[in-house]
Image 1 (cartoon, helix red, strand yellow):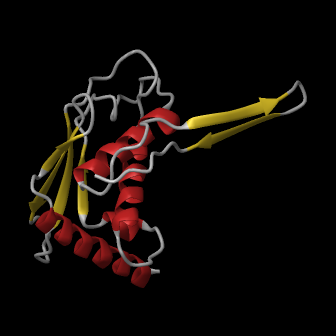
Image 2 (cartoon, rainbow, N blue to C red; image 1 turned 120 degrees about the vertical axis):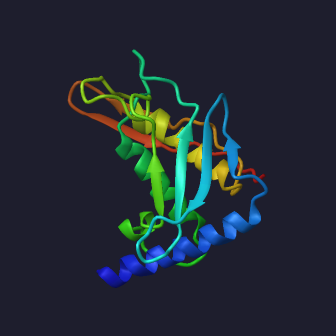
Amino acid sequence: MNHVQVNAEEAVREMLKSVVARISSNSAKGGEGDLVIIEEEDFMDDGKEKHLLIFLGLAPKYMGIGMRQRQVTSAAVIYCLRCLVDVDIPLNQGCLAPVKIFIPPGSFLSPSDRAAVVGGNVLTSQRITDVILIAFQACACSQGCMNNLTFGDNTFGYYETIGGWKWRWP
């Protein structure tokens, strides 16, 4: 299993090197104040560069839907990194090894353990994915929300989340 993760780490590192060389700015806005900054820093004992994803311009935690734990942000990041890699690798923890994610504490992406959270999969994860893909100049953002299909009666219920999309490139 270690080989699979090391291979994924190397693939993501190569992708990040090409992205840093390609993009004209080290930050990208993704809507109303969303901001992801991509920085290259060297914090590793072995000398490998570590790319830092910083989420800034986030709203503070609030009363309402959309707040989500950090895990949703991490899942969106690993999904985007895997999508951006040009080689066929399985999605695994090695994809996150080259990056460090910073989310300001107390923001709506990192509320306290006592805060109520809801709507993270349908609303927030889709928007986080949009912002990351914009920051990497990979493609134009989607509709920023997923859709739901529900049906049933008093004996059963079915609920399906469907990711939204638009067929556009930057």
